[in-house]
Image 1 (cartoon, rainbow, N blue to C red):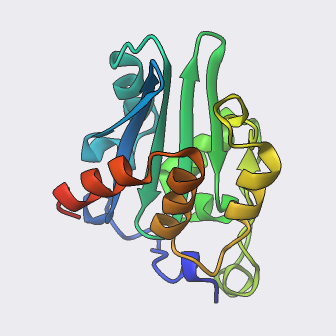
Image 2: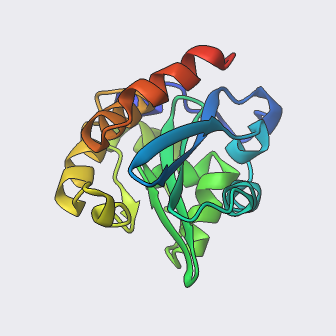
Length: 178
């Protein structure tokens, strides 16, 4: 079974039992800043988008969200709407926020039995080019998302390293109680 799905829940697990983290990343005048988002961003796409929009940065703003050590999201609000990427679309079966992401992307949630879910590899969906203007090309994000033997926090750490804010990202993670 893939590392991302080892933490997968079933539909009986309540949202307030979720583990993970949500971090806003901003870039203004060449400087990266990472800020924790509320735990509501782990369960509500609407809350994650609202919190990111409230940052009102003149530069780039996006969120990196590790949900329950099962999958991660990249959320980037913009004037024309929110760009989204999810590391494992099959998680829409067990997680409302993942289902909301697929709905926002106009992609049907997969219909898989628990046995089928255990047998398939994770697959990414969404706009893998959403960070291309910030020096993370679509193929590179695709490769990171295909590293499904890694946990989501490790994959997000790879994104932070590649984009140049690994120290800021690690410092916020160290301060957060996960």
